[in-house]
Amino acid sequence: MSKLNQLQEKLLNNFQKNFPISPTPYADIADDLGITEAEVLETLNELKTVGIISRIGPVFQPHSLGTSTLATMEIPQSKLTEIANYISNLSEVNHNYEREHKFNLWFVITVLTIEHLQNTLTKIEHNTGFKVLSLPMLASYHIDLGFELKY
Image 1 (spheres, rainbow, N blue to C red):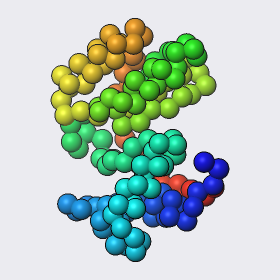
Image 2 (image 1 turned 90 degrees about the vertical axis):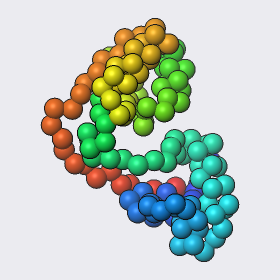
Image 3 (image 1 turned 90 degrees about the horizontal axis):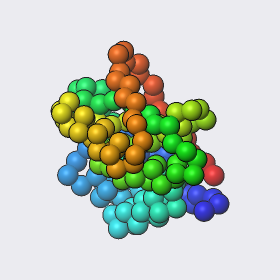
């Protein structure tokens, strides 16, 4: 995908911070844009399929619901894509990204209990064969991560 169309841009830009909180959020978005709910869902699915977006979900103030940790792993470049895909598919992980560093795969785990957090870290280590370094938050800082996207 080389260029976003107008609908794709509107979906990515208009609802980063103003996602409807209702039983029918995609229908609400469709009403706002003057299209059908099916068009909204189809367009979001296309964006996910081509890798423009990885997920749609809420971001909560840390530790207001459950617990979380920033985690990192040192993964050989030859295994990075495979391990990153595994990490991305875990329901407990809300995003991951590569960094140019010895610890090159970073991700955030959010769960309801400390026990679930520990079990998830253990499961990742067991299933990947690589150690996870957990870096729980000691102090919180608010960073507004809305980005205007244009292609």
